[in-house]
Image (cartoon, rainbow, N blue to C red; front, side):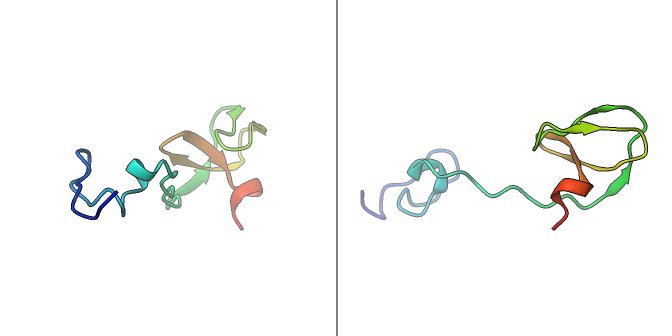
Length: 70
């Protein structure tokens, strides 16, 4: 694959494109953490989220801080 072949999704050379190379794109870090008002399940680890737990909204859903804030 040469650098002159361009990705149709993001107009980037295919050799540089994570989409074309089949790589997972990095997920942005959540910015706003807040207390959960409802019970649920963490979108990242699948563990329960209880009312009052610190959570953040991501592209995949809500995640729990106690397991992901490193």
